[in-house]
Image 1 (cartoon, helix red, strand yellow):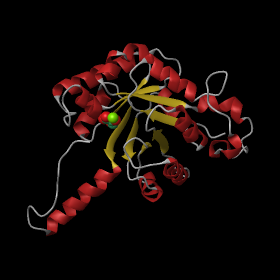
Image 2: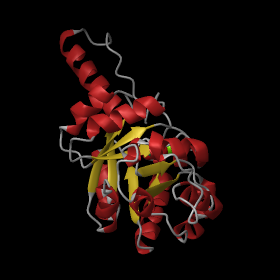
Image 3: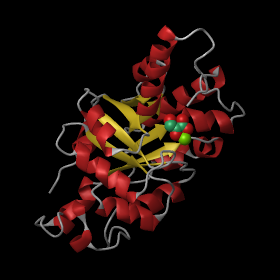
Length: 264
Ligand code: 3PY
Ligand code: MG
């Protein structure tokens, strides 16, 4: 039975530094696996991924000590079932706005009687196609659920979400939170930062792991200082683009490259 070392690291309060994988590609995922990050988020929400590209990335990462997490596109129970059968053990789910949302997700990740996960291990990489002895007895406990709070509605429900048994961690999404607070494109706005900090403090006080994204290293470090234990500090696509722009800049006249500037 593959053990979920990310779940254990979060429970132990070990700081986990991670990177978004948005290139939707197993080959580049493997490149990043060699670079020293603790965890990698295969992004099925905004990245152009499908079940097969996600499984291919899980396969590419498997020989390395880095911990893979998959972000789902939504709360759909059938799609979650396919990801779990494909071998994802830690899911990060966007836009959780109530305890009922969180409870549904907990149940989606567990077999009856604890939940509603469908049974199909003959087809499942997770169970090594029936090759894991005792898979059913162990599967539920290796599942790790990270819910994302990233709206004012979600923030208003944070206390009840934190009470839901089976939620292992809460990740704050500053970009969507900023948008929902009226600061679209400005996750660094002082009011957004204050809301993120307040949430991180609440999550840690409830004994759960708090996570957050910031591509601004100073902001990421500040979030870590107040208790965020798992962070995303960049995006593979942006690392590639930014270094390509910087190299092009060295050889082209000013104004001929496209530095851009939007926040995540
Ligand atoms: C967000 O910022 O909205 C995210 O989902 C990721 O950090
Ligand atoms: Mg988001």
